[in-house]
Length: 101
Image 1: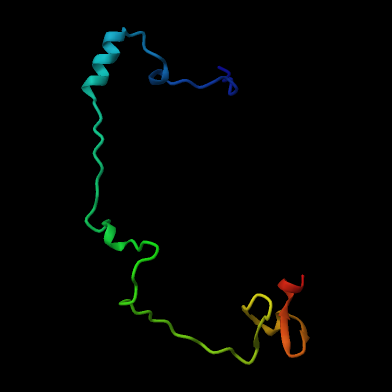
Image 2: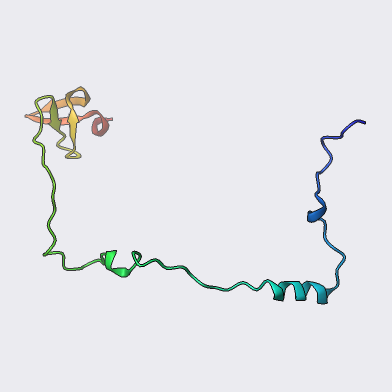
């Protein structure tokens, strides 16, 4: 028996049932859904910093690494780049290839 692969595949459960409106409404009322949201204890507003909040009691732990010998700071974008991205140097100011385009 040949199979037509272009024919739409419809499963029996996808077919609309010839049920009455009362039967459909009764089925829906039997499976009512509740709008209950599961909130975990860790998802409180304490972890959110609002704009303008007082952060003077907070301490930042950042390790600053000084500019290396093979790096330079672009005087246009003020980013630290590798010396291979040096496009030009003018009056001691260095510019990267991204800014010089």
